[in-house]
Image (tube, rainbow, N blue to C red):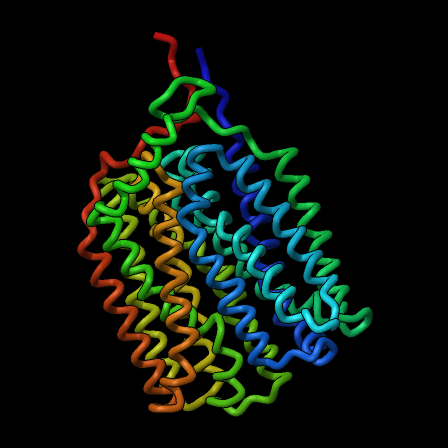
Length: 421
């Protein structure tokens, strides 16, 4: 008997599309709010509450449940239904009216979007762990996650002109159409899930057994160290995701238009360079160090990111400073492929839940960072504040250095041909 190997390149391309489109649907409200908020009578504080406590909280809380469902029912079904949820929530955003319930309605649909988007990375990483050979998983995760940065760069370039021409509802309608197309491609082309390693074809472990396996991850010291380091890593990284535009206007004195141009540089730089971290990690993991090499790459990239943050924060000339900070963002993102591949290897029996735990911690770090940055900036200024976050990244690297992994943790490629001995 032979199992049919899934098509790895097709899977990676599909996951990259899901990542890109998902980030576009996530960030479209930051563009639409310029017209949406005045028309519906909402303040910027209202919009911040909707994003932080509507979308972001739901996105963080549902990471582990989404990964658990992925482990049980497979990426094709769970991620496909998640994308359909994005479409429904985005259409709901387009239909919000100002008849006194705009805040509650928009909060609800963005909460629903957060629930659906929570499946993206834990379930995608699980699919990679199941369908991609161990020696290529860091690269696959790197391409998958980096595609979100392309979405971050393209969203304002494409959706802002659309809004100017057709209004803010067109932003959500176009995004929903893109999501619907992605769902159709996913259901048509995504491979069926392989057999669970502990059961026969077409079977899955009992709900109780799967729940116990997932809960056991909370006792895995190495996964907890990895996830805590990821919390600190994400907290430092989110400074650039959410506050770089304000840093350019306020800290460097750029105009809004100039900040819009230069603000896209870090995302594009990371999209182009970050996959190199996955490629290097996979190449080194084939040697005697095995999976340990993945974390060494991640640690090196994170330390380089911290150094570049310090350099960029202290350079007087703005363009070299932006170049250094853009490279730091690329280094931050170069850790993603190795770290996600390590997490799914440590939680090999429940890779979706392991990815959910990792990303839950990362989003907790992001929420802390979003809240803390303006307060830290007011107290100490931009340069000192960036230096503190560089120190946080160094602590994250030290935590990752304590993670103990073994080459034998790498599982065989479940889609590889199996001999009928």
